[in-house]
Image (cartoon, rainbow, N blue to C red; front, side):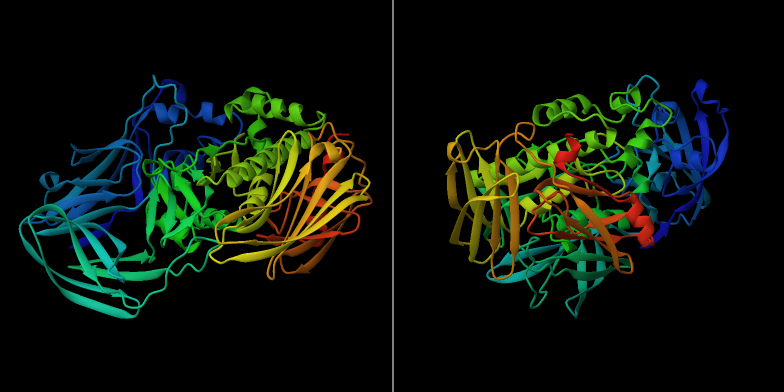
Length: 636
């Protein structure tokens, strides 16, 4: 079988442009495939960046118009059969030599038999994006985001393959599942290499369009465990069948998702994760490096699961496997817990993009265009906090509210012993006011930092009810554990009012009650709880207010900040206070990640936070860009 990649320069033509677009019918441009119409027009100076301000409305004519994307290819017809394959293409029609060959739905990979339309010599292939000017959807971004390939062979087409593991009679088996299209019964020669050994042989493929399975013994392999529970060995598999060559990644594990819960390698797993829709509205802008970054960010926040709302191919799934993440589609998710929605405003840099060409206001028309959650966010802030007057304080409190709401919900769900907790959205596909944990571009919100804390495999959890505050010990590792707990009640000057200490064992997968306090004995308006949990390998600290922040009697912490450069692209931030500081948040427009964030700082224990940048910046540049906010400052 011969595979010809048709990527590169195609010709984009305006077939039926909207009148107000100022594009003449028949106008043409070069377009690189994979790529998008929006980025083609952006490169040619026809439009501005569509994600800024209200440009998405100004450029809606692109999705409303009809366009043709065409290129030539050469074929030797003979007895060959020909197929076009593409794993990422917007809703469109495929034509070959002017004849309709297939209709494409966006979330379905394209595999089209074009044999009857191909001729000897030069041929044309055309992708037609048919606009709908009557549609109210302005979020239409026609593009090709995966390679377009021409497959040809006289008898046998291998359209694709998957590598799957199976546990049977105490042994692992590796199944290579081939998607075959055979004109007649055909013999195929295969070679499969995995775990340092090559398996070769011959198979007979029956006539028709069917799957064929080649099963091999992978030898001694190591088991894959979800993030936080063990190692994640990923085995590359090289596959060659009759000229078809590819590589797949495989992990050896058993996964059972039933109403009673999720079991991996026959051990019950508590689900911790987020849903993931489109990583970018213009899907050709999502490359492998960005998907790798997203999965690493999920793993760094101690997640073990992604719930997909849209189709992703093997690139995302391979990246997830390397990061210790289980991946489920919505169709598989009947027993997965309902996602938690905790909306907040994005960072100042993202808001600047949203407000472009419009009034700087949270409830402006541009802000509504980039998300409809502003009213809910403002209501949540007013319910919990003294309302701020400054823009930066408003953004901070919205993120603090989302992080605190998620933390409380995580505690409630874990204590109840249900199957897990899924955040409503891992990231945004464009600059947006939303309930995501990571904003567009990859910057962590406070929610993501909080998730890293409450999704930790070994952690203390604090649950507050109307009458009591209860501390729990969570052990989501594969081993039994024992922890030392120190629980202190302090007033807002930092003075200790009560201290208790416990030694608590917890079996693998267990959530154990450590202590319970009646609230009427504590005076929640003038006190807070500090919990320190330590094992032989882990130290965790948690601090919680015992009533709404706007009700408690906070004191000015007199927060002091100093910075230092510790190495190439590594900075440290030292935080010290005279009185306890709560919800301390660090922020900078410099791309990078803080070692910790959304923390409390006590007078007796200054904190040092490290920041690893993704770009070269000086200490002066980092220091001048750094903003530190705490709860007292935000409400006064």
